[in-house]
Length: 454
Ligand code: SF4
Ligand code: SF4
Image (cartoon, rainbow, N blue to C red; front, side, top):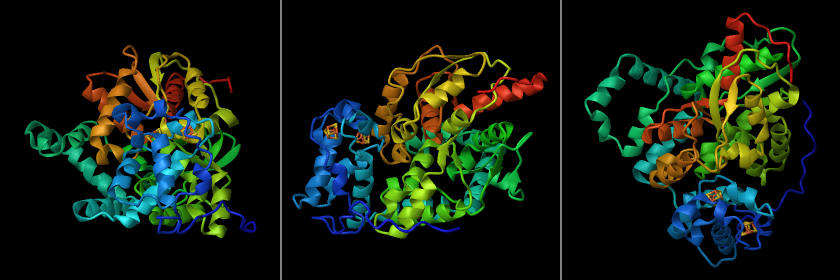
């Protein structure tokens, strides 16, 4: 396929700016509009917890700018506020000048990781997960198989009952307690299928990002996504060469690995017109691929072309139309806005609208629904205390009288499930698309056929 001519007038790359000594530093045009008004402070979960300027969006922007002006160095004191940030983007929503604090933070982390490379067990753990495991779906499938075996033979119960589990750090114990039942990945299930055909007439053809952890821990959500897409006239393609989106790498400051994965995905989806994503963090990353290529003009253009094709499942269904189920689910639910869906992609009404169109679903408002839950990629593993404090605030806003909490991001699903467990709540945590799929399945069991479309 022919590529457009590279746009060589890219936003300034600023290589070698002030005390940023490596390529791809924070971009000046991103902080230039900050007028230090402080309207972002109240939106920031870390500022709420710590009350310190350097842990606020305004403080972080000031620090990032100060390094570029040569007033500060990229050292431990700079790294702390940069990595304490949840990259939740709530500040950008609150900011009248639309300052891209999350983008600046990610670029600053890239500089920190080069100035202060990880050492010891942190380096080993990071390399194992980010380089050896996540980008390789066959290894992930093998890891999923081990987890499945651990659950199936009852070892999980033994580890819990004997107290062996308490040899792990507390936050990992909390995570283990809410580990979903592992099922086969959809990539494995459809490995010999080129296109999963629409039920009935084909109206569209879409490709689907299956994700890395998503397809191990939440393959049932991927399955529900495929069911809902095919039910609504979509042929679904699962490109075999796709890989992890790279969000976890970029959040951790490994932008080089992020670029490598981005290039692989851009090539894997090159022949498709629409890329459907059901994980908000991955979708946001895919849409922001151009940000990784300010210094590679040809890839910048290819990334722009690619990101224009990316769509979250809830917005895609909302925009193209979907069959309204006839069966009633009869349940009270509340909705949590994943940061990278609401703040990162501006998608708020579409998932709510989708839920409201399921007969029998009663929506209960959650206060501060778009406040971060503390998941933030692997933040709950790297900063367990802050993640726990943020989760406590979040859970205080979850209405008591609901049966389910719906959302559109797997990281949030794990974190919210940990919150439900920790605070003795009894809500079920679900992905929005699962509810629609369950309503369709119930309708089919009842032999009904919806004639309503949206
Ligand atoms: S980031 Fe935006 S809201 Fe925050 S201080 Fe700067 S201009 Fe004001
Ligand atoms: S991205 Fe979130 S945690 Fe980071 S500065 Fe903005 S509001 Fe605070």
